Structures are given as structure tokens and as C-alpha cells.
Image (spheres, helix red, strand yellow):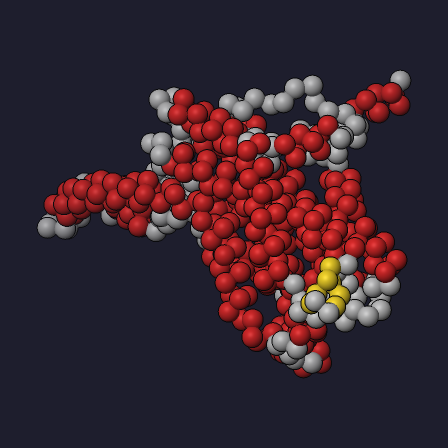
Amino acid sequence: MLTTKSTASQPRDDALPASAPRDDDPRNFSIILGGPLYQLLRSARMTDDALHLVRRRIVAICAIAWIPLLLLTLVAGDAFGGTAAVPFLKDIEVQVRFLVVMPLLIEAELLVHLRLRPVAHEFVARGLVGPDTHERFVAALQAAARLRNSAIAEIVMILVVYVLGVPVIWRTFGALEVPTWYAHTSATGMEPTLAGFWYAYASLPLFQFLLLRWYFRIFVWMRFLWHVSRIRLHVNAMHADRMGGIGFLAATVFAFVPLALAHGALVAGNLANRIFYLGAALADSAVEIALVVGFLVVLVLGPVIVFAPQVAAAKRTALRIYGRLSQRYVTEFESKWLPGGVPAAESSLGSGDIQSLADISNSMETVRSTRILPITRESILTVALAVLVPIAPLLLTVVPAKDLAKQLLMLVI
């Protein structure tokens, strides 16, 4: 009996919930659980409503993208060397893309789902959304769910990948202009190999679709927050979080750390190929790296700035109200305590009047220090470092490892 009970209490890999959660319940909010690909993976027993089976998805999807390339290059003799200047297994960008970045994109789904799921409910639990605006809040939830589940959106993404992603973007910015495992030199120019055809029409489109799908999800997140920001929220500039009561949004940045790492690794792989096979220097890409860091900071932190007008208005109102209260109290305090000194019937020691004066001053300071944006220095640094960490090893192409170790040791000491 004990064994049976233990087995039944554990989630089985092939167990799926009987019904999907309701989209009008804030506790079920998710920008991940929806869309044709999600439903396909669900039908194939590779996910469930809790996004379990992450390792199964990583192995299956990465295998589709990477294993055929390995087999085809082994047959053609381009896996380790051959006539290609860049053999398959020495193509750093490709190995990073399919064995590092793609797993990060898939793994990030679970983290984002878990970290963002409680956010919608916080608006209700904290009283930011009142009974009078709850209906509009539910409408925002349902609008986000409809967009997230859109089949048209994913069809458009597939078209973008095959019309622009591979023929234009990759050929212009990604393809190396030397003989590689995916294209050999011929009398008519660069001719794709069999592995090159699979790469261009299967592996690369699959990767680009997963990446583009993440941008779409962030758009869903941004659109949901924008709809919520159009509702009159009960923000309060006196809130202890110094963000009007929406400080919990600042923590959402940590959900997107794997996504930032994935972008950093993608850039690092591309730069490594250019450095080792085209003779480029890391310093030549400084502007490019800075642009990627800026892009990720805006992508991750940008959605929450839509609440700035409401927090700013609450701050102005609180400053005006507490300013009037302070003026009235100070006037009464001066008339009581200052002209004739301490009243005979009272002592200034431990006086409630003086304590109240200090309390008002502290309240004004809290209001003045309220930040309009739910963004912290820590959140900005977190995103920036997540992008830069995968690129950091390329410093070894500029500074010898021994000298770099000395510099790091000096910083620590």
C-alpha cells in the first residue's frame, strides 16, 4: 500500500492534466503555455501544463537540429577536417547555437513560467486592482491568453524565418565567406553540401523560430502590462518598496536571465568564428557587444516602464497632500513650542508632538525617494552581466591568460 501511494503521488512523465487552466484566473497567468508548438509538444507527451519534461524536450529538439548535421558531415568527411576550412565540429558558432543556446532557450521557458505566473495575482492580492476595475483586469488576462495562443502568430514567424531569417539575415551576417562544412567552393561559387541543405532548411529555421517565439512572448508580456497600466491602479507613493507598491515587478528581470545568457552565448559563438577563421579582433566588435547588451536591457526591463505615469501621478499627489499636512503641523507646532518655550504643563522629553514632526518628515522623505520606474541598478547589472559572461572567455584572444589572471587577482585583492 505504501508503494502504491508513493507512486501515485509522484507526477508521471506521460501524465497530462485533464483540462487546461482558466485564462480569466490571475493565478493561472502564463506567457508560455500556449500556441500550436506547445500543443504539439503536449500531444507528443513532451510537456504538460506545468512544463515538466524539460530534459526530454531539450534532447529531442536539439537532436533534430544537430545529429543529422553530424551524420551528414561524417559521411562527407567534413566533420573533423577534409577540404573545409571550417569543419563541422570546429565550427564554434554552430556548436554553441545548438548545444548551448538552444537548450537555454528551452530551459528558460520553465523559469519564466514559474517566475511570472504569480505576478498577475499580485495585482489583485495587493489591492492594486480593486473590485471596480477587476473586470478590465480579467479582460487584459484574456487578451494576453488569446494572443499567446494565436496560430496565426506562429505561422507568421515561420514565414519570417524562411523569407528573411535564413536567406537574408543569416547569409548576410552569419555565413562565413570561406569553404565550410555547409558550403564548398566550386567553379560557380559557393555550393551548399547535403549538411548545408539540412542546416539551411531545418536546423537553422528551427533555432530561429524558437528565438523569434521568445520575442513574441515578451511582446505578449509587454502588451499585458500595457493593458494593466491603462487601468486605474491603487498605487501609493508611501509604500515601503519606494516604487508605489509595484516593486514586485523589479524582480521579474531574474526570470529572463537564461534568455540573456543565450543571447550572450550566441554573440560569443559568432565572434569566435570571426576571430579564429576570419582574423577579426574582439575590439572590432565592441560597439556590437554594447548594442546587444543595450538591446537585452531594453527587451527585459522595457515592459515595466508603462507604469511610470501612474506612479509619477501618485508621487505628485502624495507630495502635495503631505506638503499641506506638514505645513499645517509645523505652523501649529511653532505656535505651541517656539514663541514661549516649553509649556509649563509639558516636557519636551519624549513629547508626542516632536515625534509626530519627525514622522511627517520621514513620510515626506519616503514619498520623495519613490522611484517612478520599478527598475533597480541590480536588475540592470544582472541583465548586462548575463550577456557579457559568455563573451568574457574571448578576452583570452586579446590578453594572455596569465596576464588576465593577474588583473583579476588584483581586482579581488
